[in-house]
Amino acid sequence: SSPVCDLRSSRSGDYSQNTGRWSCGDRMLDRRPAPPIEGATNAARGGDDGGDGSRGGGGSKGGRSGKRSSAGRGRAKPGRAAVGRVLHKLRSLPDGASSSEIGLALGAARPSQLSARDYTTVLTTLRSERKWRTALQLSEVLAAQPREEGAPALPNRLHYNALLAACADAARRRDAAAGDAALGVLRKMEERGVEPDSRS
Image (tube, one colour):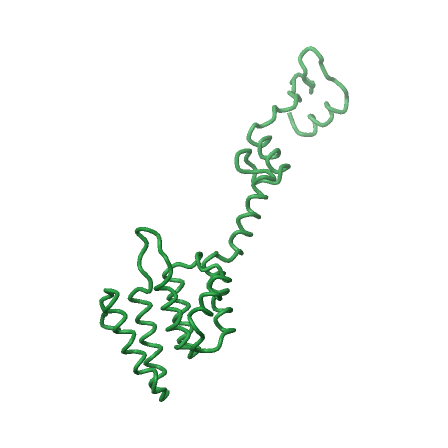
């Protein structure tokens, strides 16, 4: 039959309740609604929940977890925040401040959150800011700090190399005391069993 015949039959009301079909001449047309598709139903439910169409990963819970992930990425790591606090405190001190003053500044900045690598960052920053005397005092404070069993000794070779580089920069600026300070750093390395390398 043609689509026109189908349309006329549906308008004429020739519907059989026994068969659940419409008649068009001698042809019976099946007009029963198609059963719902399971996948489409799940997708619709998942979409209503705010997800991506699946019950497992969709829904508002997935949206909230995505927001938490993006918010977590925006937070600064504890080490970086501690480095910033330590540098802020040290910058407020005059170059060559005593080890006790530096120790108080470190305590206020919670230095326990700093790793050996973080202290390398602090020392190299002090070098770039021409605060080599503060860097030397900081190394002595690190050496005097108690350390846990199995923890590496501080200062390490990288720290001493940063100190030597800071002294060398100051010596090139005609700071007479920097040369003697560099020799003192080498003696400290020998006393503490830190082997110099090609950069020392």
